[in-house]
Each structure stands twice: as structure tokens, then as C-alpha cells.
Length: 382
Image (tube, rainbow, N blue to C red; front, side, top):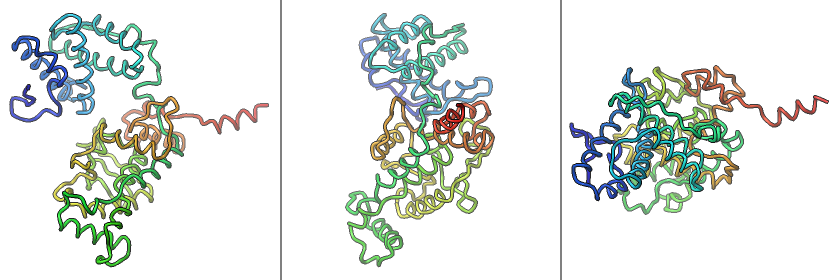
């Protein structure tokens, strides 16, 4: 098992070498295995600390690094099967791998697009740290659908966002009365919370009340994400201090404002303010939030990530009966839907500020004409 800690003892946010590649490496000599481990360590460290903007010293988010890591791991495993152990990877290798992936029935254009991005980051690292001069562009780039990756076409419509919120109300209840990990003190505190909420004496609160009472956690996450277009990493980073109920704002500090360099304030609708207030009241009943400032935690007491959010997102889509209809729907579909609503109904500048875009050109991608509006126009044409 490879050590996944940096020299100073701090833990990497992911294994240096995936379990599948560790197994594949076992047929090679120990020195080669160590060589690959050191190679991956330096690459991941660079991605985290300098990969995005080397001169400024800005790295990629842990989510981006994790995704890049596993894409590169798969590519190296393919190359070892073809040519034996190596830590090198050429532009021709990248072209061959992406071409094979593009022609594989189990892979979408989005998969290929993500591999292309990962290779660009790898070659950028090679060029900076190993004096390479790799200027690569995938030769079949033109065959990839333009509606892949972060494209704004894969978004939830306005009515679908409403349906998603309604589904969020149905998916979860407060902590089970019979939860084995719940202390008697926590059970009593939740009883007090439910007594206040249900307007009945605490002595009359039963296990059925625990079961029937929906939790405000997911409605608050979904409502806030719709209003503010929260990225997955922002859901994970959000703390209680971000919520300004008096002014109806979500205030994202400069240090936590992903992809931005300043303090941001995003406006919350009145309904979301009420839902957040209810969640904060409920949140105080749960022991796992004691001495923690995260606004939301998973059932395993961890901050949310893309993976954990996308898992519940699929359940919400099923509950709301929202069909993909050709779209690649992930948590980002909420952000894109929010951006589209703001751009179309409030204007570009308001949308830019609300969605925390650095450039107006980013916001412009979300301006879309509606079928209903085009119907009015065509009816007036002749």
C-alpha cells in the first residue's frame, strides 16, 4: 500500500495511486513502483498548488484534481498494457487513447472531453517542470459534440427547478427515533424541537412523529442552490456564518469564493430565507453539528462533494419524475438553470453578480430564447 501523505505528514485529498493501478504495478520492480508513486505525487501536488495559474500560484479545486487524477490513472494503465511500464506520455499517446475512447460505445463525448482536459493539464505540467514542449490538440476535436462538459445546454428548466424543490421536501425526515448512534440527550433535544414545530407537548412526541416530520436540510440546500447557483464545492464549504437571514443574503467570504477573488453577496428569495431559518433551528438539534460550523453535513459527518451531491440529485430527479431527454444532468444543472433564469429575466449584469462570474462573457452563454417567445414572434410574422 502506497503512502498517501506529503513529506510533512499532511494527508492528500485522494490516494496518490488508485487501487486499480496499485494492482497493475505489482508486476513491476519495486523501484519502478516507487518511481510512479513519486511521479504522481509531484503531479497532484502541482495541480493542487499551482496547476491552474502557475505564475500566480493558484491550484485547481480538490474536485478537479480528483477527476484529473483518475482520468490520468486510466490512461497510464492502458499504456502499460500496450507498451509496459513508463511514466512518459506523448501527444501521439493522447491522440490514440482519446480516439479509442471516442469510438467506444460505453463512453460519451463528455468522457472524451474530460480526458482531453486531463491530458492538457498533464502536458502543461510536463512543459513547466520537465522542459518539454508539447503543444497538443486532439485531432478529432471537431467530432466532439459542443454540448458536452460544462455546456450551458444541460440545465434544468424553470419549472423543473420548482419540481426539484418539491421533491426535496419529500426525500428526508428528521433523524430516526431508533437510530443506534443517537444519544438519549440528542433524542430529547429533537423531541423538544418537534414539540415546538408540531405545537404539541413534548411528552406526546412519539417515534411516528420523528418518522413523519420532514427534514429541512435538503429543501434548504436545493432552495439556496437554485437562488445562488451554488457550485458543489460551495455547498461543501458553506458555513453558518454565510447566512444573513436579516438581509436575505448568502455572503461568501473572499477566501471561500471559488473562482473569484473578492467577497460575494448573493440574494435569497423570502421563501429560501424561511426554509434556511427552519433548517438552522433543526440543525441545532443534531449533535454532529456541535462545534462544527459547516451549514450542511452528509450522514457520514463530512462536507458535501460532487459525488455525494450527485447521488442525492439522482434521487431527487426520480422523485420529481424529471427526465434527462438527452441532457447530461448533474448537480451543475441547477447552477446552469439558475444562471439561465437570471440572465433571461434580470439581465446580464444582475446575473453575473448573483452567479459570481468573473467575466460577463461567461454569463452571456446562458442567455436563451424560449419556445414560447419564439411562438409569439412566428405568429406575428405572417
